[in-house]
Image (cartoon, rainbow, N blue to C red):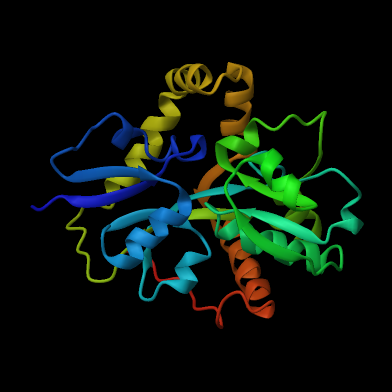
Length: 264
């Protein structure tokens, strides 16, 4: 069997899902590569990947994708790694610098500022350098590992998953595994669920390694992975995702939402 090319987001939040790939297991079946979220989506759309952990909004933008059931990166309450950082009152935000690596969260901040705060600021893409972002804008969207390192005593913070929960009462889904059109998994979809199981079973090792790599405490890492994040795409998560698609469409961020097609 030919290897399947798998694109994985190079953030801490993907490690439980991608644990088997990080350990280079099943290297005879999969060839893994690691990228920012927007890049994984672009490679999948170009046909350079067979499977990718992509921003959830891109399932609506890239035609004919299928989604692996039961797996995602989501948050029920606070997420801690998707933040709108600002210095002044949120009501005074007129320009927002968007982390160029983001797709789902870039749309989410636009939805939240409009629907929750009645704001229609200007949005501009930027590299995830907080000081440079805030030098040219009133607020900055940061995602992933850079967001986890933000000094919360120095800045005002909106946690976008918590804001979404307050607005809708639903969880927020940030990423899903998606399969490119025409790709035959040949029975290999089960390896992705088993990778998550292995990641959760190996949590002490994952936490210790990540704490050292990121210069954060093991307690912070463990709480983030176990309390803030959810990796199960269940009924509640699907309801939250559909609500997100409806609002994204209402704001002109996607065309009319299509129901998800799952891999069987």
